[in-house]
Image (cartoon, rainbow, N blue to C red; front, side):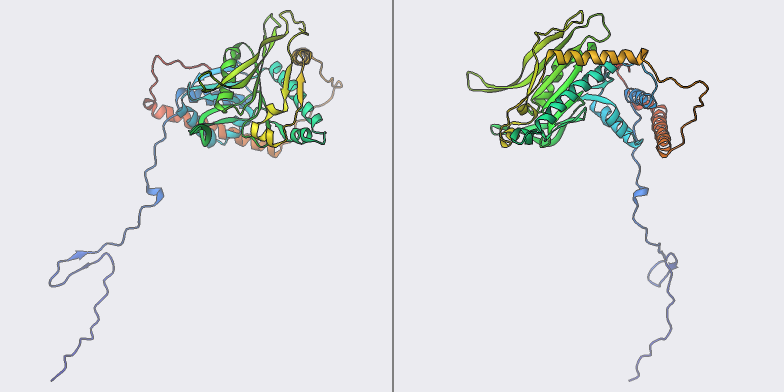
Amino acid sequence: MQATKRSSTVEPITPPGSAIASPTCPIVERHPLTPPPSKDDAPKPTKKPASRRVTQVLSSLRKLYDGVQQNLNPWTVIPFTAAEFSDLRRRLDEGGLRGFFGDKVRYDFDSSHQKLILRMPTSVHDTFRSGIEHHILSELKGLATREDDVGRFATRVVGKGSSRIAFLKPTVTGSTSTTTTETTGDERHPDAAFAHERNKYPGVIIEVSYAQKRKALRKLAKQYILQSEGSIRVVVGLDIDYGRPSKRATLSVWRPDLHTSEDGQVIFTVAQPIEDEEFRTVDGSLNPSAAELRLHLRDFTTTPVFLSSGSPDATIELTAADLFNYLETAERSEAAEEHGEVQPMPAGALKRGLESSSPERSASADEAEWDAAEERAAKRVQLDDSSYHESSSESVGSI
């Protein structure tokens, strides 16, 4: 039997994308494999334009950054939603300006009442606050020299200045209330704060108030204490009649109050052991009989940390005379800014310009970032102003 002879003919290889045919199959066109879509091909989400209020705040912050004089109140309240506050922070991040906002601008954000508060302290306010802060730190430094539990505790209390405070959401498990790592969205920047290095929240807070802030101080003190679950042990309010004929100045103190009611219910509230204690009278005289400000070491920390530290017992005191003198010094300092002496220059002396330096170049770069961020916000408003509709009845705070 004769073997079947195989054909030695080699079929040509058909490249991708060409057409092939067979007796039983119609012509089929082969296409090259399509690569999967890349991230760059994905549709980019359209960013909403900044709201009018966010744009206003950005503009004011830019002027502050540039040192432009503005007619701003020391305590400016602006209606502001949580979404607007988040958008403001994002836009500051885009321009690399979050550091300036966090370090140089004092503000509070109240998510429940939807308010952004810009704090613009006066010279008297800042100098007075600085004197009180220095006094407390000096007393702590003196206590830290002791070789006992008091000394060891005092070395661990630090001044926090006006550092940001972000409150955590509380949770209740059985009969115990604890906190989560999730924040409430509220932020505060007190005038001064002091904290033990082991605690999240400061134990002592100082707030200096005047006409615009006076009405908010009582509520602010309660929020500090209640939102921190009592971790903030003392809020000190120093109220001054700044820029008025009256020279009256008062001291107020708030503390946590935990007690059991007659029916056995544990009540957590806020007490005010010192209320509007006048240490300087309307005519500017010292009131020597006014109550003093007395802080205990246990005020600077939570109870567990205090007990684990050996329950050190010591106090820091500021008398009515101390408060009076610090306020008088602050007012003299402000007066000197207007009419004080300056260094005389010899006649004919030539003043040469400062040499260009890398910090100045960096500042110029920051200005460019500001301009870019502000320009982006303005363009978004122009391109899609219809995406932001503001109710005609809504009150927008002026900045």
